[in-house]
Amino acid sequence: MSINDDEIRILAPVESKRRFDRVARLSQENALRTTGARLSRRQALGLGAMALLVAGCGGGSSSSSTSSGGGAKASGLAGKPLESDLLIYNFSEYVDPKDIKAFMKANAGTTVKETYYSSTDEMEAKVKAGGGDYDIIVPGQNSIPVLGQGGHLYELDHELLPNLKNLQPQWRGLEYDKENTYSVVKNWGYTGFFYRNDVLDEQPKTMMEFFELLPTAVKKGRTNMLEGTTLVIGSAMIALGLDPDSENPADYDKAVKFLQPLAKSIKTLDASTVRADGAAGRLVLSQGWSTDMTLIASENKNVTAVAPDGPAERWADNWSILADAKHPVAAHAWINYMLDPKVALREMKYTGAPTPVAPAWDLPGAEKYRDNPLVNVPQEKLNNYKFILSPSPKVLNLRQQAYEKFRATR
Image (cartoon, rainbow, N blue to C red; front, side, top):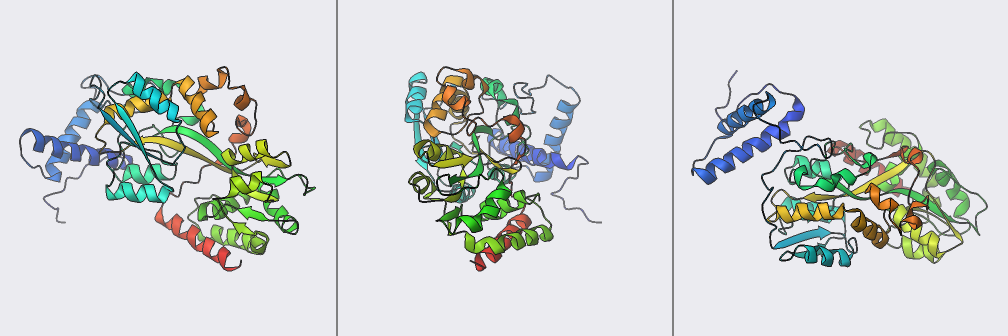
């Protein structure tokens, strides 16, 4: 058996690979910066492995933060001043401009700028291409594993995020980032549905009942689902009690078999006009995101919005810092600022999306959201909601193929 001179073989758990890769890269960068020497990957891994072993054997105090219960390491940023700039790459109208001004006022000398993307795909493509010089992005739960494992995200320094203690327990250590290594939840929600209560006599409560009502509803007006493989195929699989991230082709066949007879009962596949059309009463039955549905129901008394009983999709948007961020101190300060209860409440009022910051729900002015079951979903109901994570190319391909088969019958 031949071994490449540029390899080192380390017996360690498979989950340690990402840490060793990062240590090797940092060792190479440090050697180049301090001595001008270039280390091979084998040399870098050897130094890094020794450092990790010393740390693991108790050779010195741990730098792990206890604020979130995770294993995040100190970054060496503590005590450094905020940089003069901070660039955030975000969906439009997803941060209250007043909070940007307040942050800059509290941190004189730091200017915050936002640029916008229209879709997660657009954001991911730009980040992977290395464009934009952004410091902070707002990825959904699907993007965190892909970008983190790809080396595109900064490992958060929890020592710079003391307000992590404000996170509700159910929004810490989530399955897509179990130690909050790369992300902190910004806002969350779920995918449910709404209907015209003055047109339909039925009162569906579950996602399965939503699907079963489509053939009746389409006879009385426009029915709609949110366009996309995840929103159609994933939601159908959840309603059927299947794993929406299954790698078993038979599960996707079941979803297609279930959806094809319903295809012509879904008048439109549209996510872009749901809020406007729902509020105007142009949809008799439609799938919807919780943030949109809450506003629609508040604007039109003839619309009933439903946070489903039983299984449904839940989602989370997150604050993350890019691995090559030029202003990491300011980026940490921004995330910590957003975890302040008063700021979190202002953001919830501005976006309509529930906050994961526990103390915000008890502040004056939070009653409107705390007492609304569409926003403050009871925990026993939320426990039935599942993230759709798209964990592998195989899953993405299976989901896309199923979606194409469904579309072919419309």
